[in-house]
Length: 630
Image 1 (cartoon, one colour):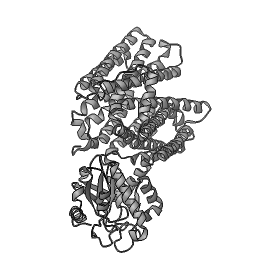
Image 2 (cartoon, rainbow, N blue to C red):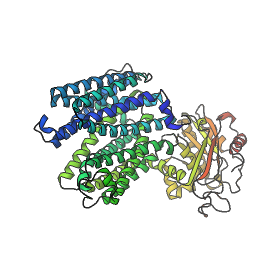
Image 3 (cartoon, one colour):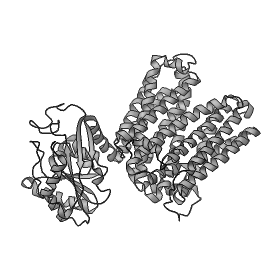
Image 4 (tube, helix red, strand yellow):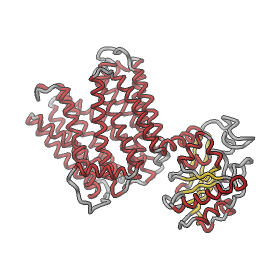
């Protein structure tokens, strides 16, 4: 990524035209949808005999229906055709839809307007698989989190601005002409930006499109289920949309009946929530150090739960006033805690969802990626409908909105624990991420020397009890460390190393058979194309200086039949003298010795062929990487 970080992507033709296209599409959807709902709410008698609240729910259902009917087909098209061409077609369709909307306003026909709303839902359905499948084609791996963060932040800002603009246009003079005309112009601008999207060749151009949405939906879900982590990530994304949609749907009634606010107070709640999601999404790139950091997902779920519970507790027992506007509501001290909770729910929601989207893109098979995204969209819609029905049922039984928020927060905790139990990798990465980001400031050099695929052995100096955790936090590939068997007795470290499939070892004088089994297991791991980590000194330094490398590395390499094994030297700096080192006596006996956020570094050197991996030479390379600072 450029030195300017994720915002540098906004100056790149690989990203900017696509970003503008998806932003304008989300904006236009919400302008028309909200304008239509407002018009039908306040002018219902001019259009139909149905009650306004019924019309609002009918409109919401019509918009989401295409996600169930056509997502499977959309995924196939995005895998079969050049995705930039699909984007241009969708934008032309959007222009035609706005012509239909204008015709509906001119004819004063509710049926035609609802048909236009259905077609806008179809427009979003067709663009959905393109939106997320095209990013891995145009962005480098280290740009994927930043790109997803910008897309998520931009989408929610577009939703907010579109909702506001739709309400303003609906209340203006000659509203119908303004809504249709502005919608067509925004769609035309989206088409022009789509024309600048670089080519994104189809991964499976010979694919035969199955027109049956039912069988193809099950097939797409089957593609997603081939990788358990991907499928559970999709379930996590779908749960987030249920959780977020549940909160958003209650804002009007919550603002009026719980806070005692007027229409503008609803906008204040929506804006606060949206800003939180935008900030959380953008912070992901910095907190994850430009890699897909799964440790942010449990961090996000904790915040979603805690602040969801707190908003239930912070909600006033009686309205704060009568029809308070946004500024009047801000003058009420009790409202600030509610707003802070909404901001933080959005913030932690960004932490939760951005890594999940990036993970789905990164670990999905390229030939099926768009169809897996389509399966994600189907499940998103299903979860949102289920959430809306459950919320309606609870509220219909007399449950208050604050209590509904509390129940949702408890359910969020249960869903998170279920996912983390099935895929401990999330919780493992969270523990490692928290250690590195709450205790140290980690600098990384030369990580590109670690191969993206294939067998490798990483060797490093041994300074402290957390060396392996620091290396795990820095490296994008899972590493199976060979660890002293005694460390598996420690409660937290035992979980971390067992779930990362560390290999226990003991000195030959203590348990020769365990040592032999460790070397054999390391060799099997290399033959399977995995990365093995070893501290060749065989002990943690108690002087700050490196001990000679032992011959264990040679024993491992001599037992593997894997070809192209490389040995990657790396060195840790700055950990000597920390709480976890043995400086001045036993480790972990002198807390706060270095304070919080002390600076440490991991330096990685060019790989060495297995035939040249002599312990003495490797020791010299690691010493050179370490430099004068232990």
